[in-house]
Image (cartoon, rainbow, N blue to C red; front, side):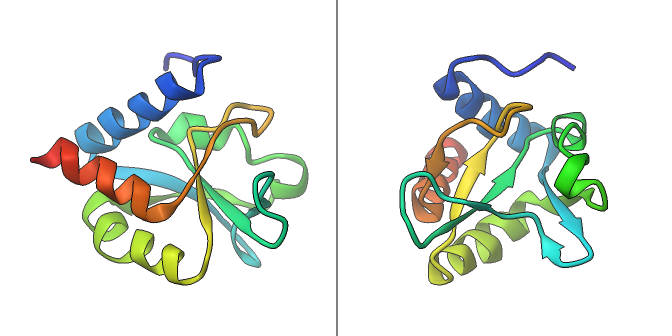
Length: 120
């Protein structure tokens, strides 16, 4: 698998393209539920990181997430249920974060809009 770029915009574009090609994205699920990180943008918000490929997610199953596993989320489920639910829960989405968990944070409805534009 091709490593992620140092450019978050490229990683975002890759996320959209690969999610549509694969029909799913990957989150990390563990004993306490889904992996979340504190937001760097907003003091009282959390971010759920998602990746466009299994191996990109697998990299993060170490240290505090050693008990976590990548779990596929079907694209249709992501668009119909997850992103609106994350918006309601005031969660942000981390898209294709690198091995150091660095990358951009997105509003779930902005991500949904991006997918809908691509699907048209």
